[in-house]
Length: 332
Image (cartoon, rainbow, N blue to C red; front, side, top):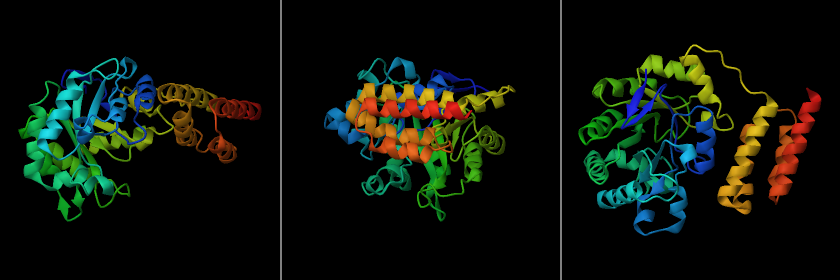
C-alpha cells in the first residue's frame, strides 16, 4: 500500500502534520526516528521570504536527520508565493533542500484568514488556482496542497479545491476533515475525505487528516475513506511513537508502547536538541509544553510540571526531569 509523493516513497503512508510552534526541526527529527515517513514544516510566510526576514531562515532550515521534509508556505499573492517556492527549492538554509513545497490553504487562525490566506484562500477558487499554478511553475519540486473541508457547513469547498489542485499540477492533496468554522472542535468529517478521494484521479494521492490519536483511528480513516495516506498532528504530541503503533498495525505486527522511563528519556533527548537548536532561553521556554505532553497521565505530573514551568535554566530543567524519572522508578 505504498504511496509516492514526487520521488519520495512512503511504505505505510504516515506523515507528520505542519503545526505552528511545534513541527520544528527537533520535533520532526524525533518523529522520523519513531517511524514518521514524511514531515511538513511549520508554515512559512511567503511575504517574510520576499522581505528577507532572517527569522524565517530558521523555519526553513532542513537537517538530514529529519528527511524527508516538505516546507509549507502560506500567502495569497501568486507572484510572491512563486518567489518563495523558488527560493526555498534552491537555497539551503540547513543541510538539505526540501523534498516538496506544500501550500497552506487550511490554517483557520484569525490573523491568517483576515489577510486572505490559509482557509480564506480556499474560498476563492480562481485565486487558489492561480496560486497553485504559479508555485508549480516556480519549482522543480513536487507541490502539495493542504486544505479543510470548507469554510463552514454551508460552504464546503474541498472537492472543488482538490480538482483545482490536480488540474494545476499538484502531486498530492491533504484534507483536514473540519471546516474553518469548527477550528479544532469535533467531529471530523470522514465523508468529505471519501468524496475527495472519489472526485480526483487515482494518480494523485489523497492524504486524510484529523483526530488520529491511535492505530484504530488511522485504520478507520484508511478503511472508510480509501485515502492513500494519513497525516498525524496533535496525536503525535508527547507521543511520537504513534507512527510505530500505526506501522505495526498496518504490517500485522505487535506493538508495545514504551514505559514511563523510556518516554522520559525520549523527552530529555528532545529537549536537549530543542535547546541546542534554539538556545537556552527559547529552548527552555518551549520545552515546557512538550514536557506537559510527554508526561500527561503520569503519577505526580501536575506538580512536576508546575516546577518545570518555573525553571529558568537548562540545568534546572534537566535536574527536575531526572529527579522525576528517579521518583517514578522507585514507585515501579
